[in-house]
Length: 156
Image (tube, helix red, strand yellow):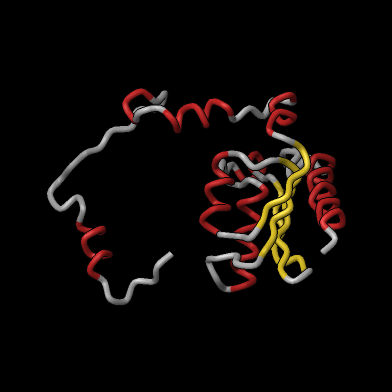
């Protein structure tokens, strides 16, 4: 597989996104068996969706293409080292590899600094900047109980 070819595609998507004034400088593609099955570009400001990162968009399209929630045997090429949210999405999608161009340090140098999120994740819930608190109501764990006992659930 020609990793350079696919990386150049992801980088070009990111550059085009900036040139088109469509969003941030990020592009990603998902490849399976040498074929691009998913494309994504950063559209956070265009769509007012903070989850519209390139990797998430590419994962969504690839999963739709495959009609599956797993990207087994797929490779993700992205113009930048993924942020914490995208890393989470990538692990849930379970591709076999991720290749990136720019580093998170290079992203930080142009104003995209996710270090605070890494730090927040490591903090106890009560010490995070955004208040997060458990509220226990009657049957608060009903959905979990139902899932645990289900004979028709599809594990993921």
